[in-house]
Amino acid sequence: PELLESFPQAHHVRQRHRAVRVQAHAARTSVPQTHRSPVVVQGRGHGEFWLPAGISIDALRRFGVCEEALWPFAADLTRVCTAPSWSVMRRAYVHKIASWHRITSSGTARVDEVITALAAGNPVVYGTRVGKNWMQYTANSEPIGLPSDEIGGHATVLEGWDGKSFLGENSWGLWGKNGFYEIQPEVIASSKSSDFVVIQSGWESYVQKVST
Image (cartoon, rainbow, N blue to C red; front, side):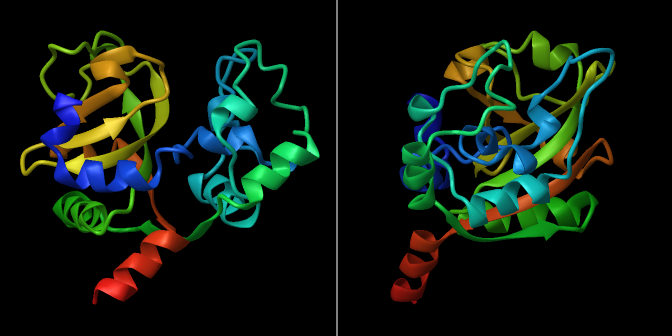
């Protein structure tokens, strides 16, 4: 909570996505098998399965996503190839995003676009290369920088900016700062990060129109 209070944009985003966590791995909870993102199916066999984030995010636009409690992730991956029940799908249908778009710029221009999206209340999903600095990250760690080693790739979401570092929410339970992390702008600007997708919900869009 203390960390969130230091990120006003993060609070803005969290209020709109509290019931339905919009993260790269969220598509797994309610999307039919053919639309689930293999990004979350890692360590299977001798490799990882990757799918562009836009395909998974578009599933949120078409099918929606339910609360994780209704279709929880199974560590043994038994639900990856199992279609959710109709009741779960109906619940997902009322939690659809309105639209999404990619950030195609790079370097500092990309950082500026991410900040603009967060200021508008829109979370940003992205992928990046991770190293031991991610694995060893704790509540007392400095903001994550570029890894000196590379273990693999990871998809996660940004939810705030405090003028110096970004606030992200991860999918590794109570890892880091109670599930959250701070990350340096250099990581966002780096070529080691890619596939930036901005998510906008219908309610956010409506609020923005009314307030202008």
